[in-house]
Figure 1 (cartoon, rainbow, N blue to C red):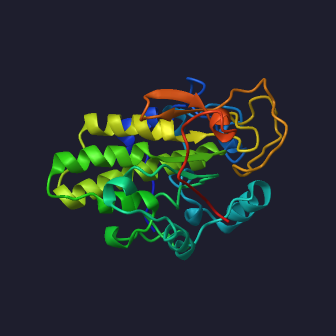
Figure 2: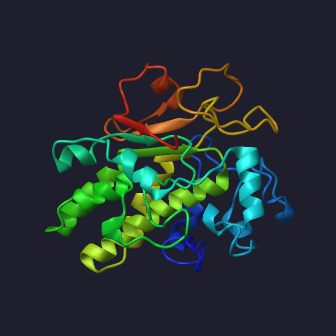
Length: 284
């Protein structure tokens, strides 16, 4: 089975250093897992492109390509599970809209998103097989499929809007990088299919800026960057958990593309901001 995330190939290679950025801290995202300790990488270490280049090909890959022992360990220690495509379809089918423009502008959040299966379905999470574009059922897939393709410039403009209105957060750095890469590759897949061309560096950079703002690293219990002030006490809970907060950690920032300004996710969650999500989805 071929690798599903190729860090050394187009398009990920072109913007890898940017895909690793954390807009809250101004630094890079961290591993937030001990899975890479054999490479000398601790949970609190920042991820960087040079170090990732020394990993084996299978290291930064979706769950389905990891051996069973590692899958079991990640399930036990991080409650990490795969989401079958039929569950994704069934839940995404519940998202309603009246026309394609309003659909594209729906604000969607996938909580504890892992590899972002509810947003994009590039591959079957149970087999690792790539899914043909017309059969993909991620909510971002459906947004891109809904945009008329008669005019390439119009499609591109609305594709950016689709990404600007699609959000997700994840605790572990490797999963977050996979999720961001999946969103990037998905854009390139549709651009190639609809207009028979590759994305330019300018387009990749513009899209990556959206992705790294909207798909961010966060401890879902604390609303802060992982391990901000908690040492080895890992947490990942849903948007709706109500637990004490450590105010010494960095509160996570997201971006309101309509008002063109950053805001604290905590303020949005607590209703202290006018920005709202139309739908919140995730693994039940």
